Length: 285
Image (tube, rainbow, N blue to C red; front, side):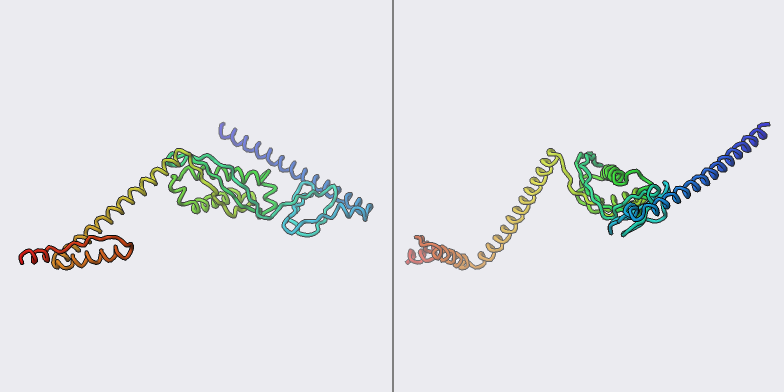
């Protein structure tokens, strides 16, 4: 009994679907006949009011635009333009789509990075429409939708990066964001061409901490460099002392050279000591 009941339900569903398909076919045939009739009447009106009607039938599409024509609510295959188009009044409606590259700024977004640092990031996105028909039929407002998905993608991607990665790999992150945005917007007939991170704003407290860290690091390096210089100077003095100890006359010559340098720079009185060896010789005599 249950099997027979299921089969009966399946048969009823099949009959209902067949009836719906038959109704759809009948309605489509009726709408097609109605469309043909309206088109014929519109053509008669155009002929009757010629040449005044020509000004309502001719439309001009610029080089950077494409026109999508709707005839009785249905899309005429293929985007039209650029140049002159012929439309049928009361039957055709058309919309222009700008094919040029469009740019917009992503408002500053407050993002919590992977290492729990709150930052403000803003960016700029460049995109263009590559399929006018899909751009009009698949989304209500492609420009607004692209801006919303760009803001969401920016927050989601930056939340997976640390502050150091964000500051060092900005170009790589921009390329990754470009790929993600294109995957999301290509179904709307939009091609994201470029994404640039404009600015990364850090909190004032974090800026002061980073500045203090950088200053301390520079002071530490300066002290290390000064210590290395003192060590090298002491080694040089040690070597010079060893050389002079081997030849006592070298110390006297160095002293005379120092006196000549002092006398050459500025006139002054210099006390010239007499070597003890000479005094000792006279005292023995």
